Picture 1 (cartoon, one colour):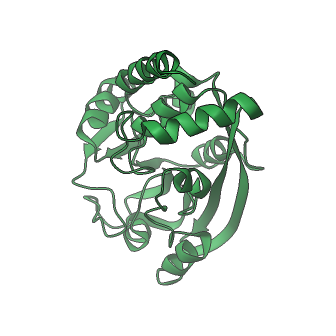
Picture 2 (tube, one colour; picture 1 turned 60 degrees about the horizontal axis):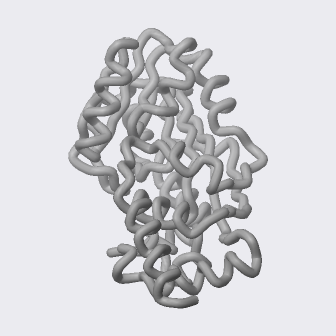
Picture 3 (tube, one colour; picture 1 turned 45 degrees about the horizontal axis):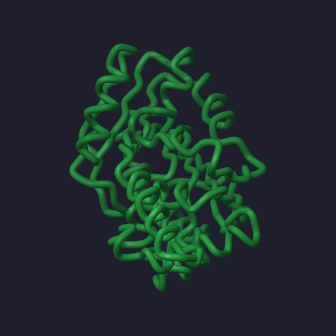
Length: 256
C-alpha cells in the first residue's frame, strides 16, 4: 500500500472518528456492523414482565431507546435513571412526553446508591448498565422482578488484543454477577450466558464503534492507532470482513 492510499484511508477514518454519537444509537453503522443475536430476547422478556407491573425502574436508560420501543405498554409509573449528562438530557427530552420520570444519577457503578425508597418498584430493568445488586433488591417490592442483560467482562477480548490492550473488567462474568445477587434477598430464576460473533464490513465502521465505546480500547484515536488500523485493513482485504467475539449474559431474579 503506497503513501497516497494510506493517506486516503487516514482521511476516511478521521471522518468516521468525527461522526457524532448520541444516546446509544449505532444506526450510522447499522449495515456495516452486524451482531449475532443471543437465544433470548431481552425486549420480549421485558415486555412480558412489564404487562404485570405497576411501577417500573429502568437503570441506565441511555438515550431512552429501549423504553421508547415499548411505550405503548407503559404501566402507571415508569422511572428511568441515567448517569451520563448528555444521555440524561436526551432521555429526558424523549421520555418525559410519555410520562416517564427521568432521574439523573451521579454514577453507574456496582456500588451506586439509588435515590428511591424501599420497595418502590415491582420491576427493575437493566440492559448493559452497571448496577448495585443490594440496591436493586432494596427498591423492589416483595414478589418483584429484576431483569438484566449484561456484556460479559471478556467481551471483544480478541479485538482488544489487536490494539495491545485487555478488557478492563474481565472479572465481570455471569458467575461474578450471580455471587453478588446471592448476598441479597433476590432469588435467581433464570441465568444464561452466550458467545457469538460481531462482523465489521469495513475498518471505518470499527473506528466509529471504538470511538462510541471508549472503554474497549482506552485512548483510541485514528492517529495513535493508525498502524493497527492498517493491519486490519490488510486483513479485511484478504478475509472480506473482520470477525470478533461478543459475550453476553442474562439474569432474571425475584424478590420473595
